[in-house]
Length: 244
Image (spheres, rainbow, N blue to C red):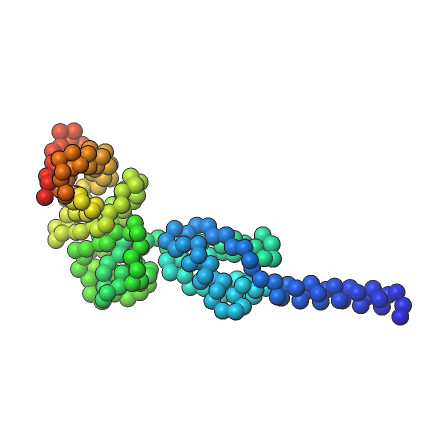
């Protein structure tokens, strides 16, 4: 056997070995970024433990090229970045969720446009329940059929203002006249109409530490803060806090 044939055989053997190793190479190290709703473990399980091939590097690489991806609750999309054949970073792009409504024993989560993006029997911490809305049947991935679609703009403005001030509301209730009420556990906040929502939330943020201090010192279990008459342009605006 001449040298040329030996080189060709050795080269072919090396190539086949590399291909064989790549085919059976599995992902061992996973890093997850961009996730807030799901834990790292939940994301990893959904992507890499779906079936016996899910951790194979080649399978994952081809699946991503073909757009075949796992379904993950509250996730719009994700991207796999391979740092090595057995190490991958999962970049998660979550759906924008502003609130949820209770419907047929399920939590129906909707985005800023009122589109129902997910249905779950589990409650997500930090996402407020929205009550007082009138709607018919709810269909996943369609807009909540409310009487006044403009309500979603107000929900977005309100939830963004709460997030900016790091305030977590358990529930937001809208009355028949559009007046909003926040439920912050032991404190209820009457916000009134849609005017000056941002200013009212900012004022509420400044007042909450003082109110909680008063509640602790006076043994108040719960109370209501009335900001419905507050206006940003009126420095003498009246607001009161009353124990329940």
